[in-house]
Length: 403
Image 1 (tube, rainbow, N blue to C red):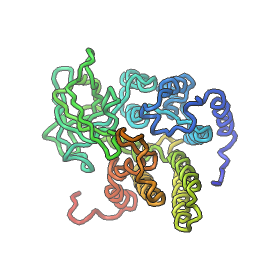
Image 2: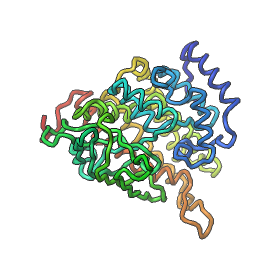
Image 3: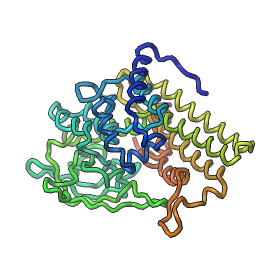
Image 4: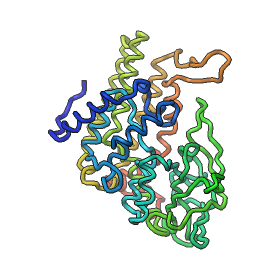
């Protein structure tokens, strides 16, 4: 069993509160349900569970109280996640609105913007997708070509995005557009909160083309924007200041979950142990070695999370060190899913559906397909290594790089 740490009396009091609440309120139909599955709305009990969590103050818990959160410290967030894992029920969040958009609004938004946008994230009215990457601007995001033109009190956006996460479930997009065509590469970009629908519920000039993955799911889309409109007041951080806001968003994407990332991976690891025990494969020395490798990596994630708690408590913006976290967990997830496919052998090739039904895969094969992209989105592993080398270790830029 992992080494248990004493977080102090305040954290233990909070643990008792959360544990007692979960003992009374956890929905039996969600016990054992995977968090990703629940988060994507694939379970009928999701809506009522999310509503109950919101009413109890367990949504957007890390946000300051004045912005609708609970103002929990990093230690308390870690405790919260541990208790949800112990109860074996998913801790539903407001997705990218909670852990990417909200923190960026809190840092860069005006008082009016925080009053207007944050409550709608907390109560689930607004659900965001990410309009960053483009066909020619992925890891080199500053090369984006999507244009934003000011027309009176509105910004009119035209361009193409790709790998738009969560677009089919969203009604808002946090979108980067170039609003000054003559500015240097990293300047002239604005960070816009773009409604995906007009007031009459028709599309706001947005066409979504789902990108189908090998297991049939479509977690990403190609997105085409044709004169999509948003109020100028929806520009966060001011006109042409979007790159600085983006760095806050990407810092949270790459490192914001460092203190709690291990929780789901721990559950996943023990589920793998149980699965391999049931098939009698844990007596194989090679399989046991693979499990030892996985266990040690999850524990490294846990202790890295403890290491960054002090920064979270101090509410420091994630720095370049967040790239270490993104690089580590994404490469682990990809390798773990590959090793579990190999460990299962021929069982990994079986479909989970009835004869004559569309091809469906089980959680392990789905995980394998899902994590093929983990080392790409949010900044490729290669880009993260450059960031760590140059901005953390102080190494010189690669030959041929400018500035």
